[in-house]
Image (cartoon, rainbow over all chains, first blue to last red; front, side, top):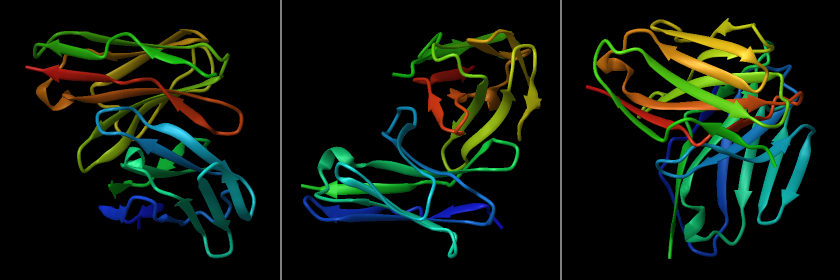
Length: 110
Length: 111
């Protein structure tokens, strides 16, 4: 079983809609969670870090963490075509390395 | 603002050549990582380092070695390049909170 799982997509949403990206993880002791955005042909960019249960908002982005359910999500409000990218969820393992999900491809249609 | 730089964006080498990929970070981070990324396989960790002179094998170290002589610099070495090492190579620098910051990547083609 994979340690970090994401739907591969592609997820297609119209411009202005809310995009919801989901990630589940298997390590119950994980304390921090990260979302990366990767444009085609580019390197991953850290866009959100979340460490405690609940919501964390940063502009149009909201990360939601539920440790009991081992679930972390990323909501993108007012989606723009420039948000079209692959979004990677990452969770540190006990050795401090990051375990990455396979990524969800998001397409925002004008 | 964290900055991670890699020596080349694109590189073309021939089978059997020795290849050096350089990575430099300017945030005084202890941790540095080398990944490769291939379509359908995601990010795979090759080697990482938690301190100068230290190195640890990742998930796919075969055919690679690394060097960390200075804190800010982490080099990936392909001793004898092969066609199956054609890939995007990504270096990352990590802070105490386990956040990792990636360089722009090197797209290596081995002919």
